[in-house]
Amino acid sequence: MYAWFSCGGDNKILRNMETGVGTFLITMNDVFLISETMSIGFLIDDVMAGSDIQPVPTKWHEPAETAVAVKMAGDAAIMSDTECPGCEYRLHDLQMLQFPLTSYELMICKDNC
Image (cartoon, rainbow, N blue to C red; front, side):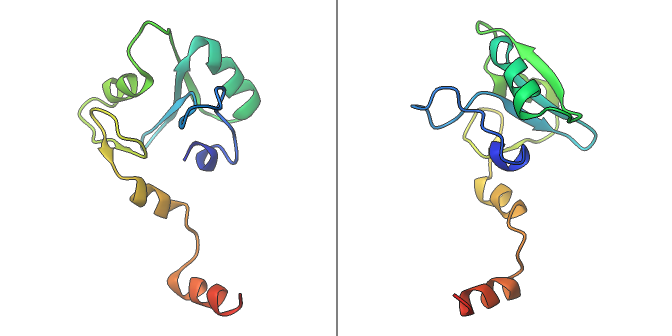
């Protein structure tokens, strides 16, 4: 989901992990990128350059990025593409947001392959 929302950005610093660094918190009004201080500069400057995303730097000894996102969201419900405390795991629903083709368009594609 990170690559989709960042238009192809890559947030993986360690290649032996399933998830990368940086957590997006997307509200009705703002987009935040939460990440450790040592990674956030890279993510904002190289991956998200020119965007209106608000950086939220954290320190390695502070709560996890997802915990910071949950705290920032307050009473609002959070959907997530990964399982984490305080979030509702809805990977499929989030994946459907990036699926631009209608059922009819999919049928046409399948028939022409």
